[in-house]
Image (cartoon, rainbow over all chains, first blue to last red; front, side):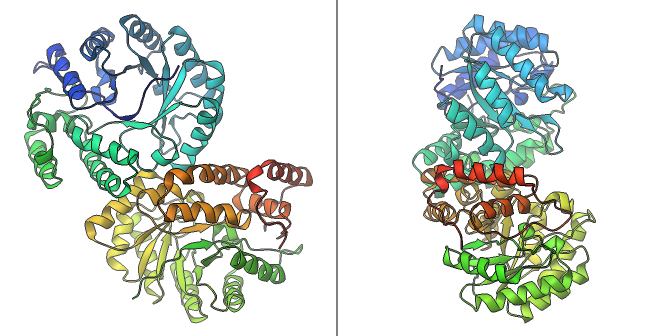
Length: 305
Length: 305
């Protein structure tokens, strides 16, 4: 079971109304925007979609809208990260029922799980659904977080025939190669997808793409970046990578508030950000505007829906 | 200053006799081996050459010996790092006086200083000489302070002879920032691979490598290095994966311990590491030899001196 996952895949934000309620119509437009601008896959709700601040009912509703709007034009993956593993299982089963193409698991991440706990958790999720399952490798600098070692990856591939890929946010040559050497040998076609767009370093070593942070602002840049990698045009790839890295630096501050603020400025009103995350202030949006102008993004990327 | 580039620098181990004295007869053979097997430069004594276990007079003597042995056939890059700034400065001046071609240094050992103190320390060492100067990212367990891209840019501003950064941290984001800043500032320093993971730094635009695995597999190292230099990154993947496999074998329990065990298996006995690094027992040596014998890609590599 191998999905055609490749390229800079888009993870839409969650549009909210001014009263902070879920904006279903806005979300439909958001998903459509990404597909129309060349997204090779749709992944929702990642952290930038405020996943943990949505209720489980809202997440199911959003998943249904995403699947229906995309209508099989590209694969749709549903993120399973929740506080409680019971909810993750529930969302996984729901995703299968509504016709999503894959699920992405990280559970039970708030608990600083051991390798054994991660293994059990992924197996539980991966057997609760027949969908292809991806995991999210997120080792934090201080050694906490959820780390998928090569050994854990190997055990999961042996155990789960539907384990097809990993979102890798280790951003580290050695860690990447430890996983890729095992995974790509055992399961050719295993998709290693870089978290945000730190893709240039990993692409030659077998990464198939990335989940995007900046695609809601600069989809053209994302697509140009991936095309340049495929064409082995490393000079263009570096231009794009450095620009995307600078964008990420802008957005990771108060993520995803700054991103949402910049989207509003580009004519895509996606509303505020739910507490405890702040909503971008007017000053912040003005600052982003000057930065995006300097990067040439305002001039070269789509405005409006 | 004309631009000094290390190319493919080999980083030799430091051989010891049974009584833990430096084994200069073997060191001479080892240097000749490296020169015969593709070294564009030598960097010594790097952390894998156990600089930390050598006394100050020994480090001076070692560099003097190496200069005489090399006789200008390739540039010799002296590694000078210490806990105390004055001690490092003195040894840096000595290295320049006795004929080293360049200097490399990292943040001070042990004190876990604040970034500003690290910058002052490195500025003191780098400005003590007129030689081309490189900073290297340190083994963090010995130093405790990460060298950040911001700190490096401060060094770029303050050290006229700064020619580059030798990276062993292998962090994609750090490497991108270093090269992105270079473009923004129109600077001309190099990002140099420091840990035998050559593809990622080269993909973002880096140039040059310090290699300790060259002692074991000089042909493979040279092959991956050459492919990276030609920007054939996709073609470099296979060799890079093999280097990663070898690196995983020798990095435990410490790099110098594993390197020396592997060297013995390759017929180039350089003795044991100095205390506190424990030498491997005979059973463990047997396992290393067996693992080496099982790596088909090492068949083409030279055995003996």
